[in-house]
Image 1 (cartoon, one colour):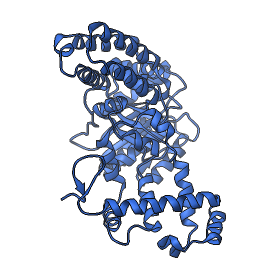
Image 2 (cartoon, helix red, strand yellow):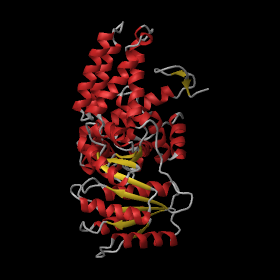
Image 3 (cartoon, helix red, strand yellow):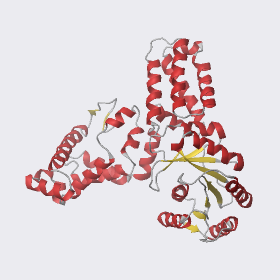
Image 4 (tube, one colour):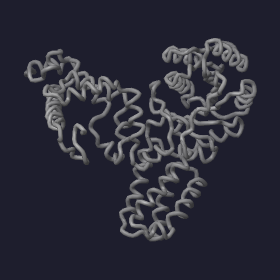
Length: 445
């Protein structure tokens, strides 16, 4: 996410930090470039002006200009101000001391509101918050059916009354059903419109007054830029939203919505949707997002994602086998690849690594489709061939290519790369082997 904004912003800062001495004129020139970048990314004009004024007030001070590494201090100032612009700190859902916690999900049609309700239910279930879904969208055809389907996939309770138009009555009965089911949280999927109108807002206001939700979360399309900010302000003025969930953030959105919504509404971004699957909902951390925008990586989120999705016992087994004389075989390679796929799209994973910029991501040849091709090739092998790739002659390779729908050249390329990996793992696995990328040895002593 934010590939273009991230690339241009870090380039502008790199030109400044590359100078031996920072003058006030150099800082002002750099800030003018940053101003242009933010406005083109659809960040609010007023917020951009205030953002740069705060940076300039700190950056042109004598302490920064005369520092040993003034460029690095300037990057630190920009990072701190980005964190403040994005909401300062992570804002969790405020759960009620007396369950159930009622979460009202609002937004326009097309923003992914109902799907997001399902994603949120999945996350709350994983956090032992026993969620329950209530279908309160009585206008969109099949909205109730869609939520029921999502509830079945997540395996949580759901309440819907197809054909009934009394929204307040539906939600009240849904909350009663949730209480009987001993649910600890209730997610109410409300009706949306194609645009904000008085009728919709009055209905939501009546529903808020009737059920007194603990959280009102706005689902906004992150690809719409300043429109998302305008929509957020419209909902906030009437309902007083307590948080925002930005959807469709897996594409290269310009970033204006994420960088403007908190400043305009003071409602924190709580989650971001990063894909279509039900597990593609990430907690929003302003400090980590600022690091990703400045291409400093997000190792903490990557570690948390790995802890959530990767089988630790299986990973330990693979690591131990990699250091053994026998080494990994293609069966292990397939297992490791499937573990990696659980972390999400390769582009997103690489984007969390420090120093990986947009240009590197574009030039990366290993994409998600390629992983599927590799998986098809390995699955077309017999177990004996996976255990001992050396037995594969020309006819076997041709059979594997036909079975996987790939070419013989691709099969040969995979086997060649796998042999290289085996050699590297054997060398890297020797005790006391110095790592090429820093201090220490492998395995650690």
